[in-house]
Image 1: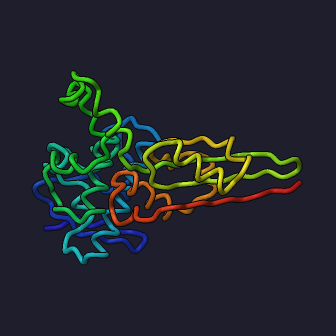
Image 2 (image 1 turned 135 degrees about the vertical axis):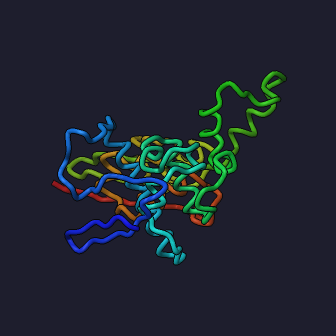
Length: 241
C-alpha cells in the first residue's frame, strides 16, 4: 500500500504505516494542524530536506527522502525531522547525520557529541567543565579551539563602495582580523566578525550562492570535517558612482 502525490509530474511512494501525513498537493483544510513558526525555522527545515535528498542521491540510498523526513526518529527523541528540524538543535543533528553519512536514525547523544563545543555548552549550561571550579586553567584551551569565523565588510572609499564577505577556520577573532587587514587594508576596520555562519544575513544572501551557504552551514556544524580543510573564502564586490 502506498500514498501517491499526483500533479506536476511528481510521484512519491511512501509506506502508509506506521505513520501518515497530509498530501501537500491537496487544498488546505480547516482541520489542518496549525504550526506557528518563523522564516528562519523554515530555512532550517529546507536546508535539512535539501541535504537529505542530496545524500540519498549521492550514496544511492534505497530509501525515500520524504519517508525519512516524516517518520518518527530516535535521532529527534521520537519526533519527525519535519517538526524537529524547525529548531536549531534538530537542524544541526539532521545536517550532521547526512554530512557525515551516519546511520539514518543515529543515537542523538552520539550526534550531539560531534557538534561544535559552543553548541554543546549552550544546550547544557548546567554542566560546567570539571576545571571550572579550580584556577580557570581550561579557559585558554577553550579559546584555542578552531572553529568557523565569518566576517562582513561594507566600506566607502570616496565614490567607491566595497562589500566583502570572509570565512575561515580560526581560533579567535584576532586571527581573522589579521587576515582581513592583509586582504582589505584600511577597509578591514569596518568588518563585523562573528563565530559561526548566519545564512540569513542580507549581505551573505547578496554575495553567496545557495550552494556555498549550504557548505558553510555544514562547516560551522563540524569545523574539523574535510569540507573545512584549508578554508579561506573571500568574496568582494565594488561599486563606483
